[in-house]
Length: 330
Image 1 (tube, one colour):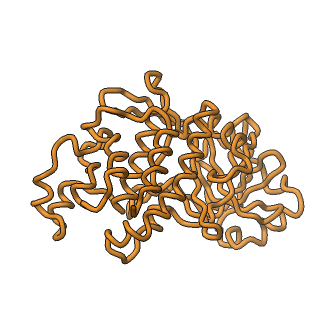
Image 2 (spheres, one colour; image 1 turned 180 degrees about the vertical axis):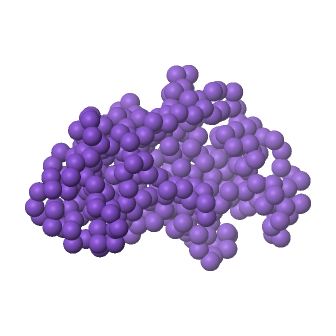
Image 3 (cartoon, helix red, strand yellow; image 1 turned 45 degrees about the vertical axis):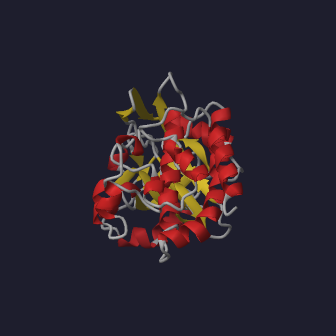
């Protein structure tokens, strides 16, 4: 099957909007109209993806947010404009990927599942704390997820202010953690319905610029771990709580270089003070910041290499965090 059709196949007003769009006018070649998204690497800036009577002009691409200045363009996740309504969306095209990781002594197989993300988008439609979108099907059966653009900034960017850590901890963190309780409730809802988020990371929580609501993005990863089917989600939630509490990640090198911490603190760290998932990340933050109360630090220690007791359900984390917040300042 041919990968694309001619621009003449576009209906009005899509054809006129395409011709007049700044992206099209800047091209040195005609736009191509794709009805088959299988080979997404051949679909480029200025091309059109036509699926189920919707026509999306590619205006740019999203980037992988974890790599800082080395951010990688994601060709399977273009930013687009709907040529009929002129609304902006993000598309996610089918992309298969599998990799392995370890969670303590357990081997975990992680993989992308467009089908799973499509089902979650249907499940959470209209619910707070989740990105919103719907799924279309291209001419050969590929799932094209049409996502509403994020309306705000990443939580891990929002929390970095000019205040000292002690001021941040006393005056900012309690509200941040109360807002994050909604994110925990959202993951519990997925688990109760038999789904895992699969890719819980601090850059996958956004703060709505208008409402201040925290919400999750990106549901296409899943993992195979029959011994503990939700364990990876739980540990990644722990990583976010550790990051929020410390307002950053702490490794021995950074601790040694910090004039407020330095070698005196670094020398007190034991193997059990580090993360079970990321072995060089400090979890026992109370050793760095003695004003962290036991009620909060004990939650973090559930995710340490020295833990004897582990969380089995999101609701347990939520209950302990609510208790810690209620005790805050007493």
